[in-house]
Length: 347
Ligand SMILES: Cc1cc2nc3c(=O)[nH]c(=O)nc-3n(C[C@H](O)[C@H](O)[C@H](O)COP(=O)(O)OP(=O)(O)OC[C@H]3O[C@@H](n4cnc5c(N)ncnc54)[C@H](O)[C@@H]3O)c2cc1C
Image (cartoon, rainbow, N blue to C red; front, side, top):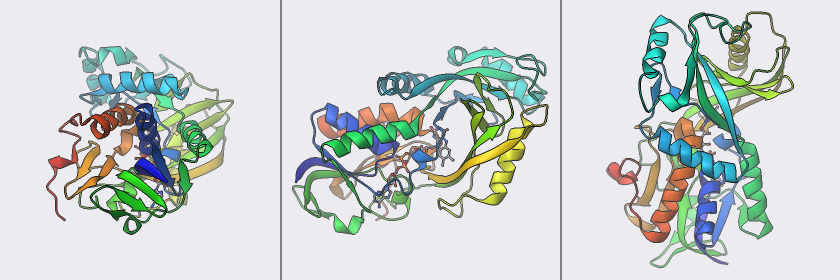
């Protein structure tokens, strides 16, 4: 079989890149190991405009958010939702109030509350909070839909890909019975562990999440305070997450589960009964400068990477998949801050 691009991995990156390349008339084939290590299957897919202790808006957030909204709405997986960020102290509240004066933040901040219970008397928002306009993305649906499309026309092989099996020559890549013009790695944090892009400064971080049933009324917004709780309706919530830089695997842990339950209960003033229905773990493909890794291997012109989406893949991936496809098909330059040429090759 002859294709233009062989894509390794069908997480968020591989799914959206395959779509953008096909939109440009290119023939793609995807190899994926059945989402064995897909952080996209673990992520809640939240888009939270102002983040971190300092409550900051990422530089390109408005442009990235607008593109994500358009493209993911087309696919029926974009869910506009408000996010209520409960402040942890007076200092954070001060930062929240200050952000309401910043022009680029204003479209994302609905209101800042000043006293506990102002928005909802059942919450423990002692220092008030900021109600933001955000969203979440139904990643399992996106991945399942794209997989069905690829399978329907024989464009997906379910297998564990070994980089040593891909043989490059001047015209392209041979992998098993397949001949491709080029290969694109979209294999998440696995590229940090082996293969041609291991030399890049990856900083993979494990995270866990729970799905639970709770004896608390559904809220019309995502709750956020040193973690998050996403209401899915009918008493079902997803809640997480944590950060761990060692023990990079997909194994959920008991101490983390207990921690999430405590934190979830802490969002509410009254006692809450919970029943955990799922507990998952994954590894975020984070990078040293919090920007994606995109581009071509410095010594292998037919070997490319689209990865390093970090903790905010849903924000980055839609626009960057489009830009990566333009780079691969039309030779359009990549943004310097995302091009992997910003790091020296240490082969
Ligand atoms: C707990 C947690 C919470 C998160 N929450 C959010 C959030 O709220 N919002 C947000 O935007 N982001 C969130 N993220 C981050 C998000 O998951 C990532 O940014 C994004 O999903 C990465 O997508 P990817 O396609 O690059 O990688 P992945 O989703 O990891 O996909 C890689 C794919 O390649 C496959 N693969 C790997 N190696 C091979 C091989 N050798 N052969 C074949 N296939 C292979 C994998 O099985 C997988 O299917 C979270 C992550 C975690 C872990």
